Image (cartoon, rainbow, N blue to C red; front, side, top):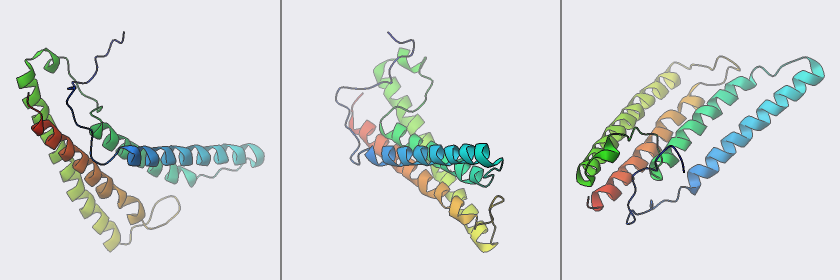
Length: 168
């Protein structure tokens, strides 16, 4: 028996229409690339006493992608981090409405990130900002912030729709 209770789920809960396999694939790809880059860096450093310092830029970017893709999958599967101590002790109807409110707040939060991510992307594009490590255009990295935030927002909206269909 686990110390952590399972998320509030209903037997009638619908799975997401778009399978989470998409996020799982990109998460695995990002993790594999991080491992390969890190292994190559360790190997080169061991054999030559030189470092691929610029690879840290790619690793950090891939870690951010991994985090956002994982968050998207977590929201789709209703496995996101939550503090449920109080909500689990409430009547199901009230807990249902609280979950709807929390999902709505999360959707607004990620929609705001999409908005400001687009503004940041446009700034990087307009001012020809380059990355600090290897000097490539910064917008190549920045582009993924609004895109992945939009994916998370859509997953949350899908979860809200599934919750709204389910009666408390």
